[in-house]
Amino acid sequence: EADIYQTPRYLVIGTGKKITLECSQTMGHDKMYWYQQDPGMELHLIHYSYGVNSTEKGDLSSESTVSRIRTEHFPLTLESARPSHTSQYLCASSPGRIQYFGAGTRLSVL
Amino acid sequence: GDSVTQMEGPVTLSEEAFLTINCTYTATGYPSLFWYVQYPGEGLQLLLKATKADDKGSNKGFEATYRKETTSFHLEKGSVQVSDSAVYFCALSPIRTSGSRLTFGEGTQLTVNP
Image 1 (cartoon, one colour):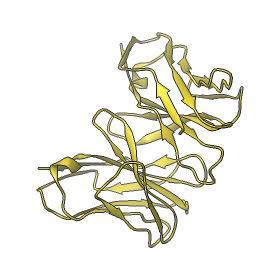
Image 2 (spheres, chains in turn red, green):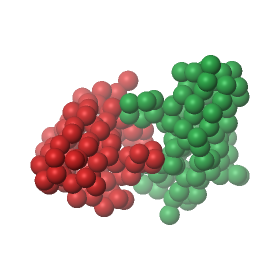
Image 3 (cartoon, chains in turn blue, green):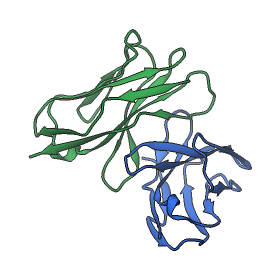
Image 4 (spheres, chains in turn brown, green):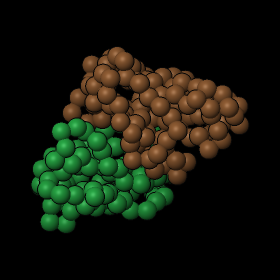
């Protein structure tokens, strides 16, 4: 069982606010990922990292940014939230080909 | 590019019914194949995997066989329970990459009624 934690689980904020979604893992995995999940369930990779100080954009363009200063921590930041950012955000980590997911953050921007 | 196609949902079954969720893929060479499950309000969990042709992955009564000739990895369970109600994702990991990026299917919502 992998240990990967996301906070907060739920967040409701107003338009224009800056937010940071936290993701931490205790397994020492080099690879970490952020996905955006539609209400229709489809997953879209928005950011990934293969190690400290390494970040890449994923398949879906996103206005969010990420950082990877420590192996265990991979936060996602939105500088100015908009209603179009309302979604579920899932974080994952991996030692190889299998990915382990956190429980997700459900974000609502009013 | 690589892609995964799952049967459209939602799927609704009665308890103890037989389940099949179809999954086909397009990829170069021999990718690794996975089924993930997402229970309500949770993240995804690995259900089973297969890494080469004719491998059978199994877990919790679910099975899937890696069929290279038909590029398929269909998920089956002989007798579903209410607790199996969830969203199921088929995914592949290309053999050519050193990382672990996954290509996911669209997800299939399964509801099992008592």
